Length: 166
Image 1 (cartoon, rainbow, N blue to C red):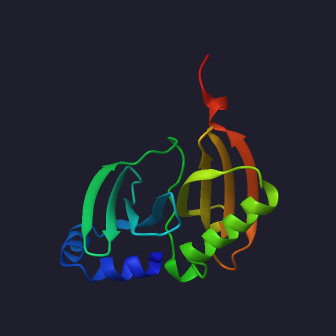
Image 2 (cartoon, rainbow, N blue to C red; image 1 turned 45 degrees about the vertical axis):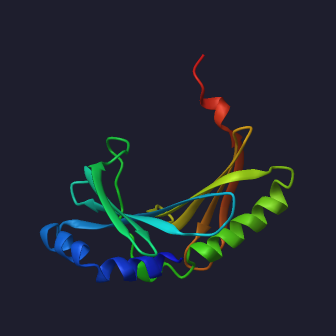
């Protein structure tokens, strides 16, 4: 499943249309995918934030089901949540994942990933895919991939253990 396909499905949903009418100040802010075991995308979580930037409503879009939940947004106090313009997303999740997989093989060939987290968001660089691969030993490979042309903008490797408290 691609993000644009999930968005089309969501936008046709009656419950979403009713929610959107009541929440006109919300805008598309992210798409979140978590993969484990293989790269088959069966569900995509699509997030909408209000203009004040303090609430988020997410819709989990699956082949035969759409679920909705709301929460307070998790961000730094002065951080801005930016709107995604889906017209700027020329590289969808499947293509971005191919770029990240190739970068993983090229730069970190000994790292074996068991979980992948893919996040479409709008940062200072515009719309991009923020992709994280996690291993059993809690090593992390991180990739930023541009949505306009699929360019690998950044890659780094670190360990989740570096964040533990002593």
